[in-house]
Image (cartoon, rainbow, N blue to C red):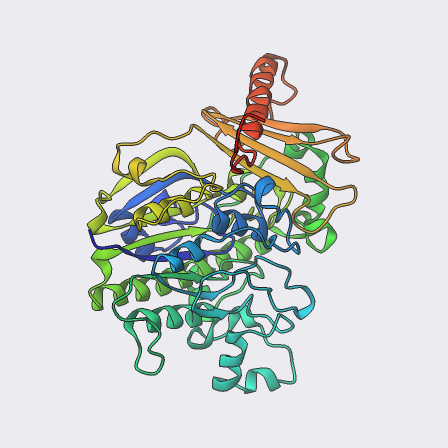
Length: 479
């Protein structure tokens, strides 16, 4: 069989429910819905960390946070870690990337340090904002709209016109690669490709081009999922984050009025729809070039967004479904992925590298900890039955540090906030029965009726942590 092309489309901060195909009738995502109808929708995909860099490192290495070592934003991926894009390049794939990557610190205008990543085409742009690291989007924008950089008043880069918006730039660069635009001639003829389009939306700040905001501004959108007094039964760090997000670096939920929360949701959905339109342009380019049938298309996101649910905004030391569960769509017509399939097994972000290597016939790496999802997608495989996510003071740092570990198994979700000697905070946690309480309002951590379940899950978590240690080093003999 001809080796397939692979197109990985990734957003930033898109929670699992921000998708029409997932049952959300408030957000317009016709192109992503069509992609789901033509392929497989994994309904329960969990990331390995609820913030950007550690999660993205798990994607690119196929390893858990405690294995790859990039434990927080601002931490660089160790040099010995191997990216699966390097494996594909070594196997003859023409590899390219446009947009965000975030495998090392970009703080203070610092340019991201590259690994031996295998990307021949590398159009890196961490984010669209002034003061961000010098990047290819800024250089392009200075060429086409120099007035935006010379303006006397600050420019809202989230709300730039669509034709010069960061998301449109990502779409343009991806389409140019696929169509071998006469000005760029990016793609190598005769070689299969692996191309990554990393969108920044729907990341905060909450803004979008006016034409997209208009589509949601007057809609009657749902209010945040919570109830009075909810956080009194949750770990105290959530009350702190409710007042001040990002360890005090951003507005907290309690500082928003009801109208402002609705405006934030409208802007968030507007960003999602903007990305959806760019995905539509990219899928059309695959059709026009005759590449669609032989291309594995993967759409996903690096983590979610709280959006006011549980009286929380943004992301951070929290493991709610809105934070750690993301969309995952796969389409591959010639690869036997059945159209319109929904897979309810628990899958994880570390599985994507193993899946892509398997699809391309590239040998698996011994240090990879994920599983090939293609048998699950085809209805012939069996899942692992659990998911693990780890937060190690990974976002804006708290003092004392906050360390969380989440285990999802069967209908249960266990979240432990670690205490001494891990941190100076007291040990506490959360326990949810997602069958009876899918919105995670009732914390059963301290419930006398659920102590046996909690104990069994904690013991199983210890087994998971041992099972996911790195024992890839070859044993040469018994002694």
